[in-house]
Image (cartoon, rainbow, N blue to C red; front, side):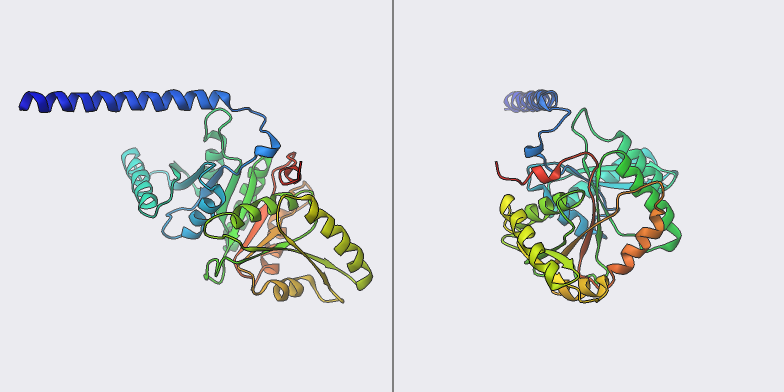
Length: 320
């Protein structure tokens, strides 16, 4: 009996090694098959999420999972202060986070690194994480409310943009999460720059299990009724050209400040998307970001979107 048991254990061990080898061969073949220049129509967000301890910022992990649809990769990452942990403790923390995700039914990769500070660690991870063409193309992180850290935070955002990644910043000052997950508002400024990416993200959420069938509204603010007629016609054409169900909403400002219009029109939304300005040499980004935060005060959960440069996001959703 002992002989049979030992033989079975040896067979199981050998089969485990074979399976590991098969998976490794498939992964290798898949990586080499991937193109370094992705097909626009097949674009998916491969998300690197800076969540810290997932239990404290679970909304980020939940959002990344909903956007990935189990068809693209997403990674939960944490930056530890250098010297605070050794390599064994870092590895143990990765295992703990991975088990935490598994218990909640979340399939994601985990990466924990050590760096002198959070911002340099984030930049280091962006530069080094991935294999071949299989690298994160979208960065997801939480909003920073600290005035003392705003400059470093914004310098990191600019760095992400320079590395041709899209940046998503989740802001939830009310701590009510995503509410009923039934209404998504987009602050619309056109398909160029951030508009195309915001539509893709809204569509991915709407077709996820958690947000199934959510309403997507494209909110465009115009100064008067004359402009509203033309704007509604143009916006309706845009919606018709895209592979997404969205409702055009033209709002006449009548001299009302934009932040007030934004709050009144989106107060019952479960999620709001707002585009960010493209970083430029003559734009003091920390000051700009401070103004953006003030504008978003009082809104439901909001995602600031900064699309990667030189990618035609508008083509992803267009009908053939």
